[in-house]
Image (cartoon, rainbow over all chains, first blue to last red):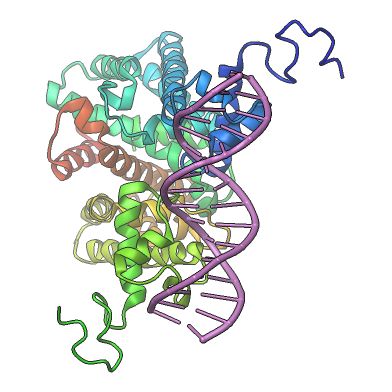
Length: 203
Length: 203
DNA sequence: CCTACCGATCGGTAGG
DNA sequence: CCTACCGATCGGTAGG
């Protein structure tokens, strides 16, 4: 109903009203979530957005271009979340901790974005961290503030530690490995305890 | 040449001589490495093994059965590597460290196995850790030995820390994230420095 | 283990 | 943005 109201374009399609590009990306994200990156098709995404199979090619050169758009969007959202965590915290330790929580939360709330961001072959530059230059630099800065006496090399190694633990946690949590091993639990609470142990010198 | 020597079966195919199952798994691993789990086909694997497209169905009910065989094989190899690292080390700290090195080394040497092991939907039981019951238990044991006064809850959280850092390191190293961020370097050396910092109380 | 084949789906294009 | 379509490939099966 209410779709053939006026014939003056913009009102004939059931879904979008000019934001087909966004609608296709949204549909693709849902399908990637369900079937993986290689397991979804542009045809499926088009159908889910309510358009023909040829329509996506008006907005994306090919399937890979769609994926790259999703990757870019993901890194923008990701960097914003990390920056917010950084700026919203006072101490260096709090900055690192909250960035870690934001990292994992992003991965859990945007698993399809996360998957595309880190498993798309970065043929181009895309910077360190698979594309997230900004978030990476904030982490380096926070680590430097927390360990002001560390050498640059040690600082890098500390960044490796923080990055690895948070990335590994995100992946294992999403895959259900922790829930399988320890029983279902609150992921954020589990992460906060882990990060607490990591930085707790009294253990 | 030299393939129609004797017609008494076992000598007509160019590759395998009865171990077609293993040949198909090997071919599949190579293709998964190149195109991902969803990106390889049984037909490709069959061709690479030198047999017809119908031949694989003599050894595997369907494509998923091949993947599950690879997953099982992967966990056997993985558990063996972790057990060897555990048993070959004296102290608890050494056990944890060497298991971590073995974990990452396995992921780097068997990336296709690793990918299948951790990204196949575990519809069945498959135990904690996505299937690796044995390696997981050894890690718990080593952590308990290293922190004998920790409560069971804290022990779990310490296992989460160790597992996360090592898994995250493996994934990020394989994806090339570290090389992109810090420049290409020796992965094992980098990991040993990171694990050293993790357990170094004097920092 | 092979030949031959089915039905389905896919990425992408022609030509409006 | 649509209809119609191509060539290719896929998982899987029939029937030896």
